[in-house]
Length: 487
Ligand SMILES: *[C@@H]1O[C@H](CO)[C@@H](O)[C@H](O)[C@H]1NC(C)=O
Ligand SMILES: *[C@@H]1O[C@H](CO)[C@@H](O)[C@H](O)[C@H]1NC(C)=O
Ligand SMILES: *[C@@H]1O[C@H](CO)[C@@H](O)[C@H](O)[C@H]1NC(C)=O
Ligand SMILES: *[C@@H]1O[C@H](CO)[C@@H](O)[C@H](O)[C@H]1NC(C)=O
Image (cartoon, rainbow, N blue to C red; front, top):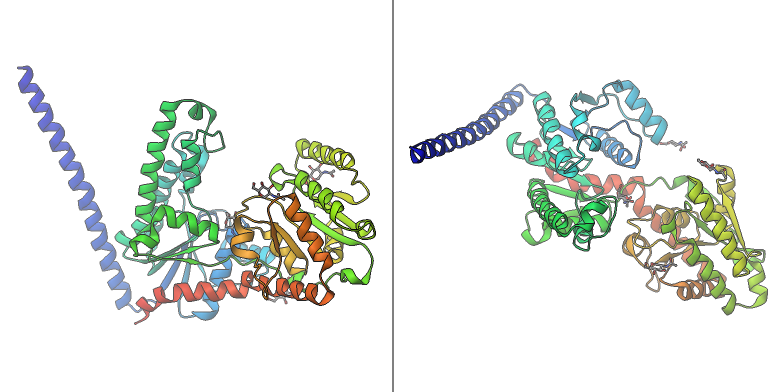
């Protein structure tokens, strides 16, 4: 009797599983056919080719949005025959309002023939919705939102500019679109895996998990499985664009792009608006007398490593003459976000007195834009000390005004920004206080002509990060995708 009922149950469960699988795959198959027919029909009706951008937070006005709008601006100019669609979840912003805000925020004038497709399910992307398994939850949520988008509008080329890579298989396989993505930051990185393995407590790794070997092990399996799934989704992208070497490294490691050979990553630096900085006059050269100003910009956060900057000054004093030392002034500019930051400034001032540097170091907290401009225009040397910064926009800005930057030999400044080989040198890299001091003293000892050469090289090298350069590389990268649909 027992045996009989067990078998019955097994049959029922097996049958249900088969039924569910058939239903799911049948549904996917029918959807694929449906979208194929829809595409044929619209081609027959003579609908223009169409590119859609998936950017549910397109009205946020941040750096990621600048990338989106510059890309659209480039396409409107170079591919006027293409229709442009933006999937957005900003339900209470009208198309006109969005275009106006783009103009106000980024000084980009878009033509108003962009079609906005409004998505109502954006709430599924919010991290707060998923107290556990957040990245998996958000990624599955994005698929849900992607389904809404695909049903609302079927494009020919699909570009994800927010890193919701789980939507790629949907648009590529089910929708039959050509796909591309622009990645600012990998959803999961090998660093995150390492932190779980070493059981370090961070934002992405709660103390409770880090303490328990079992939870850490379980989390590692979860991350590994997620990484495989993420990599599988990435393989549906016909073209992958990344915003920096740092992101490129991580995407290559997780997506195995280069080893499988199916997709290659293209480095397309995001547009930085440096034209105003480049238009400023350069600070007078050190040989003309006057103070030798060294500038360091950055919030008063621990990772900006201000104590090390002070220690480098201390070292510098040992290796330059008194006459030079009296002319040197380090100006530390930064904003304070909270009382901890204010405390940090106080500690730094004490440390400064301890090293008896108080006559050569000045702290400027929360200064106005005007005052900042004045400081930029009077400093010849820039200091940047953060370790492993992903990019280093501050370094680029310093170079744009013609400062000679001394940066930490790591991260973005090393990989993307500073070139040290003789003949094309545009700045200096250093690792510890001695190296920093040596680099500064070397800059001071250079002849005026050599210094000028470096400053000019620095100024022109930031054009790699300009809007024009972004538009050029973006178009070059996506052009092959468009060709497939124009003939
Ligand atoms: C905005 O862009 C135009 C050209 O596109 C330029 O002439 C103008 O100076 C820019 N305005 C600002 C405030 O940057
Ligand atoms: C790439 O995007 C990340 C995340 O937004 C950012 O931290 C980094 O600075 C960006 N890189 C560049 C070159 O702007
Ligand atoms: C600096 O600005 C921040 C916010 O912008 C503010 O909270 C802080 O109190 C300001 N600090 C000073 C010294 O003005
Ligand atoms: C540069 O980064 C390295 C690695 O963390 C650190 O040891 C060093 O102190 C940093 N240098 C400066 C001047 O911040």
